[in-house]
Amino acid sequence: MMIYMTVKINNSSGMPNHTHTLIIAIGLLLAQGFFSAQAAEPEKSYSKAPMASYNYAMDDALLGNSYEKPVWNLHDTSHLPDWLTVGLENRTRYESLSDSFKANQKSSPAPGGDQQIALQTDLWVQAKFGKFRFATEFMDARALSSDSGSNNTPNPPNNTMVDTLDFTQIYASWADQNTLLSGLGTEVKAGRQTMDLGSRRLVARPFFRNAVNNFTGLRIRVLDYGRWQLNAFGTMPVLRFPNYTSSPTNGYGDPNLISQNANLLVNGGQQWDQEDTHTWFSGGILEGYDVIKNINTDLALYSLNESDSNNNATRNRQYLTPNIRFYSKPIKGRFDFVAEGMGQFGTVQYDTKTNNQQQNHQAWSNHLEAGYSFDLPMSPRFLVEYDWASGSKNSANKTGTDGRFDPLYGASDVDFGSSGIYSAFQRSNINSPGARFNFSPRKDITVSLQQRAIWLASAGDCWGGTSCTSGTLPGLVGNSKGTSGDYVGDQIGASSRYNFNSSLNFEAGWFHLFKGQFATTAVSSATTTQTTTSGGDTNYFYVQSQVRF
Image 1 (spheres, rainbow, N blue to C red):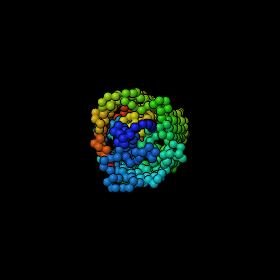
Image 2: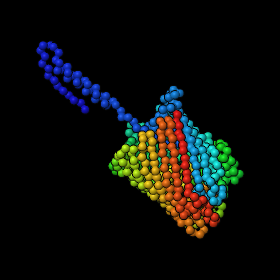
Image 3: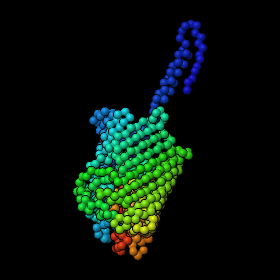
Image 4: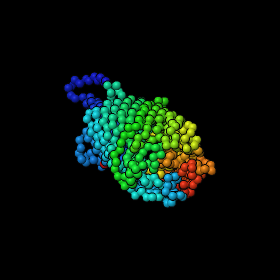
């Protein structure tokens, strides 16, 4: 805005006109204030970095870094040049589990409990040269002091807990925030990388789990700022080694190699991760922002094509998974919601040793959520939620259409609470309403309370791992008398986080599972009649710290 003023001055004496001088002085002061206000930038708000080695320095090439720089950081302390970024983080977690619910335990009924110290250490190095970036992330994830209690996972440890000394990411990328002066941002990334897509229910870098998902391939991203974003990718999933599988149930896999890998896991050995060259995971997701007022939407399609190799016995999944989501973001004094639906179609082969027939696969899942954020001190927010994922009519999965939903590479802690050695629930054969209440008694403290009732979507199917086969961490199935029902139990939980500063954070949590009929009478397989779970309720406790440099 420009303001023009014409002033006629009659000053025949030649003496200074004091009124004129005053007007000029006031005008200069107003102009100074106006331009100062224009130059002042609003204070940037930062999101709290997750309680995981998810390095603050992994800035978004198109949107910048949303995490506050730690007060103790290597870049400033070491006087590194602007083109070089180095970050170091460590998370240490102690967790304890009593009266487990899992079938693969060492004796029945379950004696005592289980515990471990999970360590996750992460080094991030990135070099920027104009629009090009070269980055690597080196992570060490291991489990210490894991005892031989009721839970045979991670005893011996599995590679959701252990992935020692390996490159989680190593890639080259090119990014332009205004491609060809179109106003669109474009990023092309090639190499090994992690991905968080959409709601993170199907493709995610898990935060709570000790080891993460990663992929090697090409990813292209196009962003119309504030309007829409497109991600398309073609990748090979990375196999975490050493791996542990109790038996090569589908006819592939060397038993001696499996035993050797198990010993490496127990003793903290190192083996380089490898791309699964027999599996191809690809797809795309289009995200639209404020499509209708404050309503956002995602539309995605993922394709998974896998086959067996000597080091990786698979279920030969050939899946197409469409996904659609509508949601609004939480805003103080307003309601918000999430409505997400997922389908899955294709074929699967559970056991090639006894059945060479590919089964047709049709499965479904949804997530519904409605919440309200109160415009009050302590920022309280209450929400109700419902999750459903289909199961098969029978746990043997040898005849008929397979209906057990597979969450692909998603994160279970998005909806079902802490994973770790607890890992009670996944998005597979589940029917579960719940509620949560979050608040912040202080700016540096957040508290979350939650409750969930859990039924099986199909009483004839298993509860536990997505495949529920002895080769991939079995779950439980209904007993031979048919009296197990479908009620798993009721879970309550509480967690709290304290941010000492931007470099040091602490968190603690507790979950209690009131076991229902299924959890106390189910068996480890359809061919046994012995109950493998303890009648006592399950308790899980953890405390962890996160330090960033």
